[in-house]
Image (cartoon, rainbow, N blue to C red; front, side):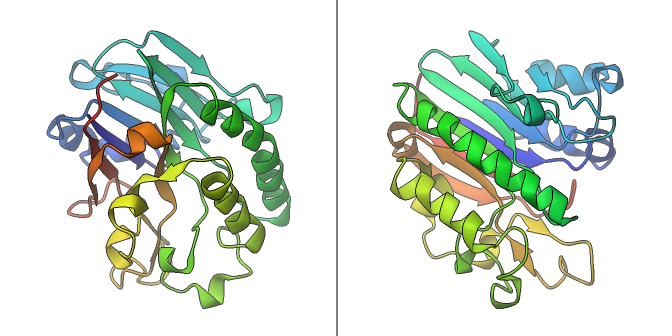
Amino acid sequence: MRIISANLNGIRSAAKKGFFDWMAQQDADFICVQELKAQSGDMTPEFLTPHGYNGTFHFAAKKGYSGTGVYSRLKPDHMQIGFGDEEFDAEGRYVQCDFGNLSVISLYCPSGSSSDERQQAKFRFMARFLPHLEMLAACGREVVICGDWNIAHKEIDLKNWKSNQKNSGFLPEERAWMTTLFDETGWRDVYRLLHPDTTGEAYTWWSNRGQAWAKNVGWRIDYQIATPGVAATARAASVYKDARFSDHAPLTISYDFTS
């Protein structure tokens, strides 16, 4: 089982940069995408069912904003759009697709970098989403949550950690929240299970400012976080950097798992 997570920073922009051509070559079972920046009326056949995949989407109410989706080879047994929170479901941040005993989720956590107001919204999201994560961890299903979590968990997860300790994405409260997921709720950071010490090769996002991409001044903020059973079957993980579809890079993980 092969799963890809990719923040597209606009599905139309990523398509022009070759994302769907690349996707066709990956032999993936599931492709989770975030930051569509599109509404249903913007979705062409290429975007809805590329290369025969089924597409399930959560569009934001605000035009040109957020949005998530799951592409799957098979039609889901069940789909859930949103996680039951009025404020953040309006922002198109959550799609869950169930296949047998496996749930695959595409998630786009808020960023707080633009203003204190958005940082406070991010804290509200974290507080409201944690009970849902606890419920999922205890539901008896195997779950993989793919997405842009907008948090670098540890110092190893970004280049300039010392100078970012007071910046959104590496705040102590955000990092502690991630630690709670792994140490108390039982979720697994799948990439780190396979590559516990990797630094620069693990980065998935680079600022458009300066020469962050050229100098690999990056952050690891895109994750596949899974329940222990499916996480234990992970065999290979990589970040694709040979072409740029957005300011993020796709994260691909292969699992020896059958639902």
